[in-house]
Amino acid sequence: MAQESDPEFPLPPMEKYYVVDSSYPNMQGFLDPYKSSRNNVVKYHMSQFNYGRAPRNKEELFNRYHASLRSVIERTFGVWKKK
Image (cartoon, rainbow, N blue to C red; front, side):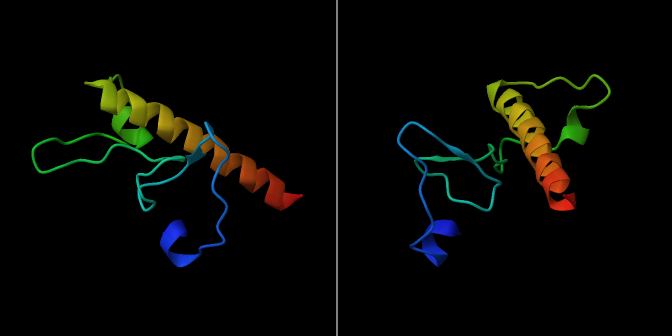
């Protein structure tokens, strides 16, 4: 985790966020997806929303937007790496 492994890791400015995956801590400045629990399965991956499978609640709606944004960010880094 960024905070535990590297104290020099920069935190985002106040009222800004890093979009992170589920391996990062849920803490101020880090926007990670909702996770499933034993009693509540929450979809996250874009493939789980394909073919008309709409989000069932606000957590899944957030995860859908989070996954979509993460995909755009990863594609952007891929384009930059090719230059």
